[in-house]
Image 1: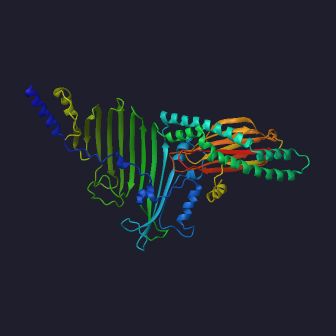
Image 2 (image 1 turned 90 degrees about the vertical axis):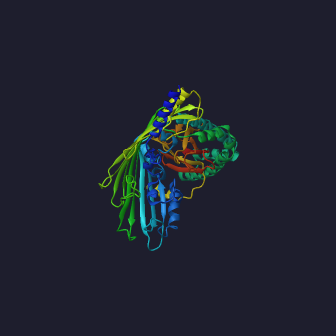
Image 3 (image 1 turned 45 degrees about the vertical axis):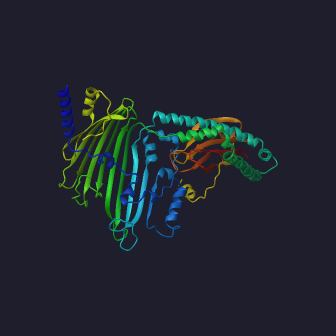
Length: 417
Length: 136
């Protein structure tokens, strides 16, 4: 027994100590993701400085403010707009966001970002004579969008149910409020009388009808305004509708494909007829979201021209001037056993396209995890690093001995070396 | 569209949730139709329509076009009442709800955009659009 125990410990220590280099979890597929606002990210503009008008009025107000009431060009300005929102397209209501038709998906997701700033040679914002102008532009849209999950559809149906109740109450109560307004009823009676009168000329009829309609309109506006500000607030249907609206959350399940692109143009002499493209990038992101207990897949291809940092060049030896890079990766996620088991496989490829100095390389990581309860997990990770070395970490081997050979619960350290 | 869009850009909007007007019709068989557009983004809308005391359509979700009302020669002395509830989205920051009504097919046309800002996310606004039809 003693020999078996010593042998078990020897194998345990040798396998664990035979674990090679650690897998660097800071380098992962998320680093390749397209920025949320491409133009601003490329120019280094903070998110809080960006104007995001959602309708034409606020868009006009933003332009007016930036140009000091249209009297001068701005020294720095950043704006992000969704053209469909500004143009008030008719496919923007909540029910249409479940659509998978390309026309709906494209216009609902199409987003343009524009930024103008003056920077010095170090990329810091500056307005003195030594600075030069930079213009950033970006766009993004979805090509394929997954539909709502069953949970979201149920939440929408609930919202619709309470809208019907609230609308029914609105119709009933405003009808009663109007019926109980003697001035309004009198004007409505006059309107009917004028319409059917044989003693008035056509022009007199039209004039009187228009006048009466204006008076009726004012009273009805007051009644409706009163309903919105007071009566509705005490209606159970209205309050249930607010609750249903606050519970609504979008979750999607199915395939997805998005495209993002951006570029930065410099104006070294601050003249419009001389410009140089200093940076550009394009991202194609796709995947399949399976939700819980299902398989999810996520992949990215990224092209960058003159990036700030070359992903494939860890040592920073290469200058980014005239450099194009192509990077990509994929992640597969499998969940099972009611969320207790999670398995993932991630691969990353990186390359420099127009220089032979750095060879393309790739990395592959397999992660397995199982929750055994009592706040403990079995873990196993296997990977091939970018430099070709193999890595293996996790407590699975130790756990195999732990479960049967030692016969007592022991807290397992995570990711032992 | 461009002219209307430009005008709307510099319009100082005030809250208005109701509109009543009179619209002339003739004795023809031409159908009067209704378009309803609900904005802004991700807001949920539901509409129903009445002619006097009779409901002519209901459960219209979101925006819709070319909803038939009645023929010109059937509308003299009648009132169309269109009721819409718009629920603000909690997933977007914009709190301005609006509904655009277009009534087409009569002797004249009616175009109106009603709007109101909600004070809290997820709140709802009730809109009413009414047209009294008359024939000279």
